[in-house]
Length: 473
Image (cartoon, rainbow, N blue to C red; front, side, top):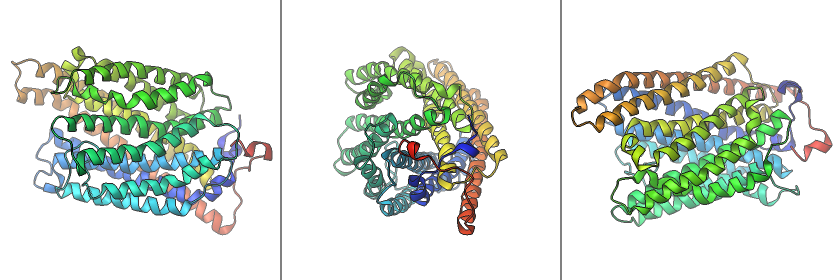
């Protein structure tokens, strides 16, 4: 198979949506670096509590909320939406429409995130995970998301192809389901709040829904498109893909109750979550069968997708195992929960998005990536950083969980025993930050090269697709 630099197609959909989609991806990468800096500072505070302790804007609680908000709503949302719109435009058979709305939505979305972060830093945060931004920011985010997603919905409704593909299903599901999740959670937690323990149930439902019904579909939309295009082979066991899709949609959000094991909630809620985690393994198994070609293919995009797919599957198994009460006695309320979260969000979602970005950007810009050295550096640092981060958090959590159940061990001793692992977490965060900076620099150089090429009228090094294959690209 020819190398991407000589055999990559640039379609009319790529040319029409180039700058709005690159704006989304650029916004995501900037937030990725910002969140990495904040996460590094927050991790240092875990083993060195006096670090920046005199600055009330950067206390550990606020800093953790800001880093999480920057990562999920800044990086993952922008990048995921950019990839989803790109996939829908290509598979729809015609250039994206309403791109002005997408640009306006992108600007307001990122403005809303900046306002929300300022609100968190100033002490105006809520107490709900993934909804820490002040409630006056949430409606702006919902409206901006609808404006961005309009192009994708129009591409889906106006598609000119006979069949549809799994990448389209996941992209459209994410576009439709997230506004419903956000508005429902806002209504029940911020505007007309439910009382007592119901708030914890709603938060668990929203957090899990944001992963299973929004971030995971955005990442899978890109993976399901890139793997067959990069390998040149049809996806195996594809007839099971619809079952995996609907399993995720109907079962995914039900697993949030596993975080409430032992809490003052009806016993059926965590029990249902345990059953849902086990049922959801069917979805992960089918995804693994469909995308297993990523493990045998070459290229940067497939390296990231194969790593992300492995993390996505491992995270599912750990979710199922830790949803059992006997295991939760050790793992709950420890760094092991954070390790699972980082494995799913960073090891799974982010790595899948990285793979899609590495495949999409050359087609959007019409130019190869600017620096192969920066590209290789990002691959090594990202994978090494994720392994070190998850492994260190897991070791710290295992130590913490066992010692919390031992009445003879004091909290000071637990802190001393976990400190070496938390130092390793800071090293991992620094490694990831350096890798993400390399990606941002490489992206900026590649976009600048595309601008120079378009201004000078230089011919793209990529071939245009033949008429017979253009409709299927």
